[in-house]
Structures are given as C-alpha cells and as structure tokens.
Image (cartoon, rainbow, N blue to C red; front, side, top):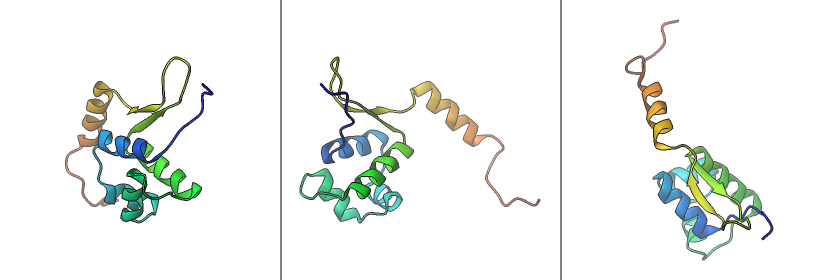
Length: 104
C-alpha cells in the first residue's frame, strides 16, 4: 500500500452520512451543484480536481476525517472529534445564552 489519500464518490457519500449533513449543504459550501455532488457520490459523474478538493474540504469542515490507505488498514472516513469533544464543543457553543446583536 502506498499511504495515499483516496477520495472518491462512495467515500464522500459515507462521510456525508457520518457527519449527518445534507447534500444541499455540502454542495453549497463546496460551490458545486447538488446534482453534481449526488451523481459523484453514486459514481455516475466525475468532478473536476478543484471540485473534488472543495467537497473534501467542506466535508472536513463538517467534521469528517479521512483515513489514508496504509499497510495496517484501508482507507476510509471517521469523525474528526470523539463524543466527549463533541459534547464539550456543544457546551461551549451554548455558553452565554441566546445569540443576539452586539450593542458594542
């Protein structure tokens, strides 16, 4: 195995399911059409290298972590943060009450 980063449609689909985000949101963040993303995920359409890169980055922003293809295990995707970290982040985001306009 070559320790390379593999990114393809089925992996993108798995990552999106894992981080529980819609195709619309990923497509919007990656600046691609939703139909292009869905067809890429199904293996029906290729994206340009730049589009693939933007989709990859968008999925990472949503919390996916892509695992390289290595000799001790194959490539894949997992969550960037463990459950404890996610709970801590959610607590931090909720501190201070409701979001409102700043009077400063």
